[in-house]
Amino acid sequence: MRRITLSVVMSSLVLSLAGCGVLDMGGESGGDATPAKGNDLTIGLLLPEQANTRYDKFDHPFFEKKVAALTDGQGRVRYANADADATRQETQLQEMIDDRVDAIVLDAVDAKAISAGVARANAEGIPVIAYDRLAEGPIDAYISFDNELVGQVQGRSLLEALGGDSASDRIVMMNGSPTDPNAAEFKQGALTELEGQVTVAKSYDTEGWKPENAEAQMAEAIEEIGLDNIAGVYSANDGMAGGVVAALEAAGVTKLPPITGQDAELAAVQRIIAGEQYMSVYKSYPQEAETAAALAVARAQGRNIQFDALTRERVDSPTHKDIPAQLVTVVALTAENIEETVVAEGIHKLSDICTAEFKDDCAVAGLS
Image 1 (spheres, helix red, strand yellow):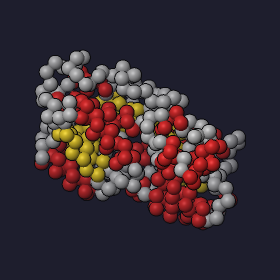
Image 2 (cartoon, rainbow, N blue to C red):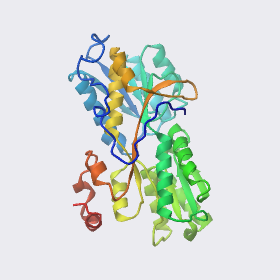
Image 3 (cartoon, one colour):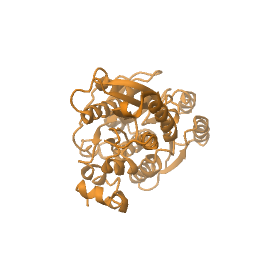
């Protein structure tokens, strides 16, 4: 994917849209004086899976709340989750086209397979915003995180955990689903850090991002490489990291090697505090979801000034060039910055993190 005008902040919290100077979409000032459509809108939201808890727990409610705020409570969100079934998502997309929703925000299960549906929406004059994953076809805009940077942060963090001269260290790479274009970018970013620094003994693409698939693949890697010969594990997300931990513990590991992750899931945050997972990548779901809502409402209402202000970057998909985009920054999440990231942004409460099981670990981490 090609990027233009990319601004990256890795070591601090993601700024709010207002703090970044993006136009306030709440009123008439600063934009097109008379929108093509009013606030009585229906925005379709198609999310890809339920195995990753972020979609139902964060993305959907943040998105819905922002649409309501931008439309004085008159806008509606029609939500569907495909549960990792590409065929189901194609049906959900077609139903939204048939019902003439005003715009669709799409996080594709299979970025290539959904392209025909995107083309049908485009032919019917329904704008499609690609969300989190860059769907193929004539999409109107793309909102996501800088995926190669995510992989770089993961790879760099793993090297830091291994410490010193690690060229002889053998690691396992647990990459994401081959149908998700983001997975290839995470992997590419990670390899820019890892190649020449460690030995990748085994590398897997994990169908559907499913933890149980990652667990089975890790068990295979342990059998082939040997438990004592695995210095670290690159896991592309937290769900798979949980599967990796389960496989290692089932094999009788006494001290877990450093394991990466992504998404800052509650279970992963607790594993980080307990020393079972080295890090995760925290991505500001509020900013991503709210930006997607602003893009969809702006496009549906014909507010081109606001739309353009939110999409000052450009990306290429395999089928289309120079797609308007916004790429949100990311943060490496470790035991040292949990309070100022996921807690400060309201993703997790300390009371949810520091349950009785993790009370002592939280005390050691200075969380109370």
